[in-house]
Length: 364
View 1 (cartoon, rainbow, N blue to C red):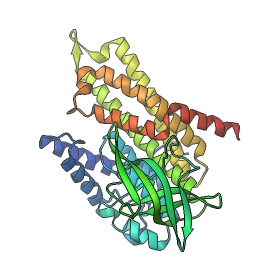
View 2 (tube, rainbow, N blue to C red; view 1 turned 90 degrees about the vertical axis):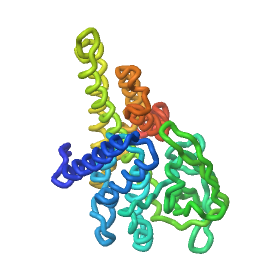
View 3 (cartoon, rainbow, N blue to C red; view 1 turned 90 degrees about the horizontal axis):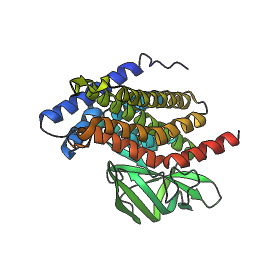
View 4 (cartoon, one colour; view 1 turned 180 degrees about the vertical axis):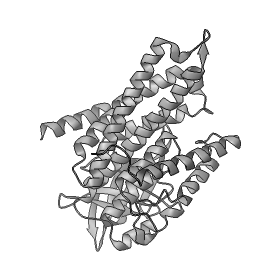
């Protein structure tokens, strides 16, 4: 594969970085934490929509750019690099990509036409003790042309903002499917559940009416898109924390010398750099395979392992090297840490990811 961004992806990365940096600076000049307050979040989300960054994978017939997983990953990496608290991961990786790849024309028209104006989508991918499960216990029985969905989903991002929610379900014939559910549907109860970086939602379905998205391959592909997006966002979050920490130890002095001049500090920064670059290459390879229609599962498993095991450890080092500054809520380091922590938790943690990778390698 070619690891360099192409003539479409590089300008896209630069545009995303420009928009995110501009809105961060604007929030700071207004005296707000660039990723914290509701007003700054809404302004940033609107700015991303206005720049066309939310509709990059939307078909051209609906006003989008018609691009794919690699370009989506480029945008999510920049969102992670700035640790921006916006629903980009849920909307782009959990929503737009699966609907583009599996939705009917009518479903695409309904769900994607307003993405460029800031419409939010999300997916309910996890269940109690079953993160990102390919064997959902949430059930769906056929009811006319649609489904009636019953069960529980956990850690759902932005369920309070979403136009519709993609819900993996088990059918009574033993197969799986993805159902489309409106968050205001009868029989659906949402309960807020705190996460490190904000709020997730527990959703309880009691015979909730839904329609089907795609065929038998929709759920495996939804999970691939979700993992790829999470790894891309995590890649950016670690790279952003590394940049913050490098600048801090370069400019902060102790005993008349920059912190970076001390051998122990240099060694710790080097460890974070190795973790960051390895995660970047694994995530990039997985997203490229997904975009090219090749089997990305092994690369996704490797990238997920680095994100779940090595990235949190790297965040601890970055916090340690910042000293007290890293704990200041007006300083962005805490947002990078929270984002990585939530992503690692959503993947199921290092042990779960390692077991999944071992099972895949053993089943070759």
